Image 1: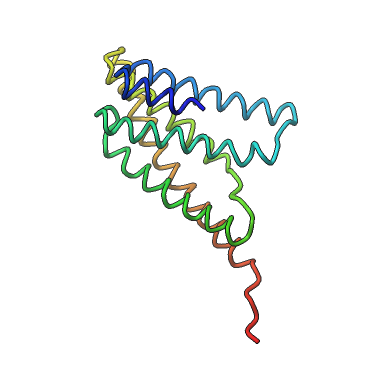
Image 2: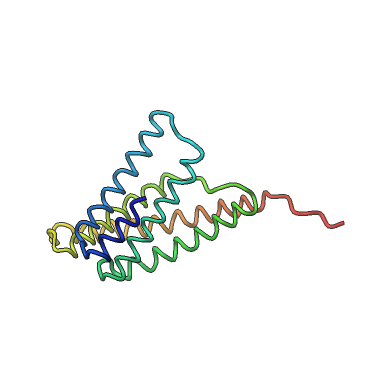
Length: 173
């Protein structure tokens, strides 16, 4: 629900630092929410479906907005968006053919956490908020998160292939 607020802060008000802080806050609360849901045994099927979707929407908005604003480097944005497209299409294919969804992996959660940190750090550094402090972790988290993101993408693609192969093919008559 905060994606439009983020976009308004970034594009409408040109508040890059506040937009970056919001990305960080969203990433942090996403982690806390998931942790509490698991610890308090309040995980739901709806939550399992909506949480990854909300993450994807926020990350995509922050990446595209960051690219347009010149905040996040294209060398980070392009491969991340390509990964989102590949995994998104695969997930839709799996759901449409089998009614199942991809199960989120810990590695995927770790990659998402790193990407949130990287994106927020790129925003804060670009806004002039202690660039000496935020630029190194932006690049470290960005590169490590990107590698993990693609690594888990290949795992998800294997999951999709296995799920699709387990669907019974119609028998010709």
